[in-house]
Image 1 (tube, helix red, strand yellow):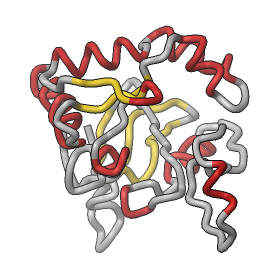
Image 2 (cartoon, helix red, strand yellow):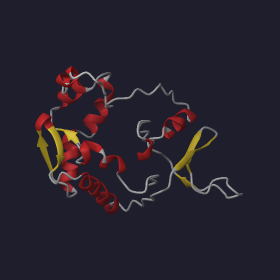
Image 3 (tube, one colour):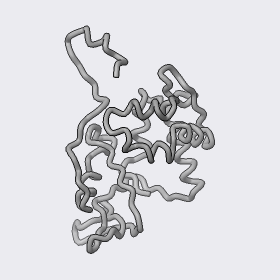
Length: 191
């Protein structure tokens, strides 16, 4: 597994003000009702691995969770690092080799068939041969474009386009809204 950041779970560390709001404790219909557009798109994902499954996974891997107001689920410790540790523990148990500071430059395609990934390190500079990892399947987790220092640089969108996927313009969500007017504070918490 390649991770271009210097540590696992860099994005996890910044969620929930460093506490990591891992999921919501409402029922499945409540989850779907909270999705702004096309909630049906998420049916298979949510039913395949539900919010309860997330909580069970964390508990089974040493990260005990609690439910707070608004049905938000956090680690009991209030430390996002405990969530990352639970995932890292499971990766070790499964003997997954994690290479930090190792980004992917592009998907390795031959005649339209995925062969693996070409790594960012060691490619085409000063006559070096490309480094690559052969694979039958690759999961492209694109993230977004909103926080480049966490690795969200948009690379995944470019890779998806290279394989023939249609990519639509990104729309930000959960972004801060700053105004001089004070009446906006009364809207806090409204969806």
